[in-house]
Structure formats: structure tokens, C-alpha cells
Length: 171
Image 1 (cartoon, rainbow, N blue to C red):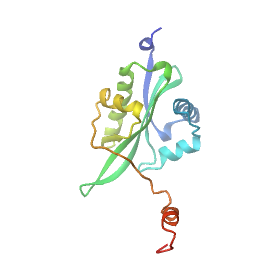
Image 2: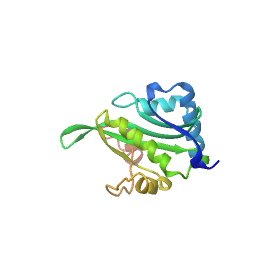
Image 3: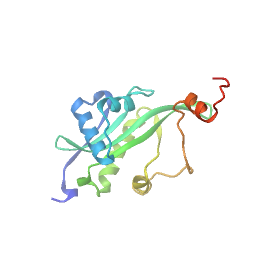
Image 4: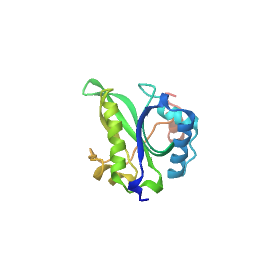
């Protein structure tokens, strides 16, 4: 049977609607795809700590097995002095046995986009890795808004200042 002959089911769930088996399957697929060791606790921390206290998960299933995921985390930003909801696309994964059929990814992403519109999220952004960058542009129709040469996360400014500015000023 060819990859495109498979009968997939596409469903959308909020984080709070996922059962522990689904979270386990999503994590196993993520961990295998990205060579990571994400736990259920880390999954919940990532997808529950936001404006809605849930994220959106597009699941591509073959029978009862999750073989693809498209996630969007909602965030509230002030955009031109007005509060707006945005979504960040993260951790898109398709099992290696089922890659190649772009229509499955398009269908999965569209279902997520249709769902998030119900929550007034009309803009989705992401920082795809180099392998997925062209897929997002060519298959999903994403556009570049600018060039991001680097990014930083101020995990602990106190540690940063102590390391690079050892004189204790204002700390």
C-alpha cells in the first residue's frame, strides 16, 4: 500500500482534551523525530502555560496511532496599541513512514487554522528549523516577515550580569 493510500483521521484537540495515552504518543513521535526526551510534565508546561491555559493540537491518526502532529500555542500581544491573539506553530512532526504526501500536512494545518479562527487567532508565526523552513513556505504558503540573525532568551539576567559585569551595581 502506498503512503497516499492510507486512510488517516484528522482531529483537533485542546491540550486539556488530550488523554495521557495521546500525550505519550505525541511525545514518543516528537522524541523520535527530534532525538529528544520530552516528558509528559514538559509537554504540559509547554502547551498549558499561555493565555488560554491550553494549546491547539492537530492530530493525524492511522487507526488509533498518532502519526502526525501540528501544534499552535496561543499568545496575547499588544499590536499597534491593541491587544491581539497570535499563535505560534511549534513541533510539527510527521512519522518518517508517512512523510512525502504534502496534502496530509496541508489538511492537518488547515484544520488547526480553522479551529483557531474560532478563538480570534488570525495570525500564526513560527521559527521553523532549516529542514522544515521550505515546507512551511512552499507547502503551507508562509511568508518571511524579516530575517532573524539570532535570538536570545534572558533566562537569568542576574547570572548574565555577574558573569559579564562582575562589579555588583544595581543587583
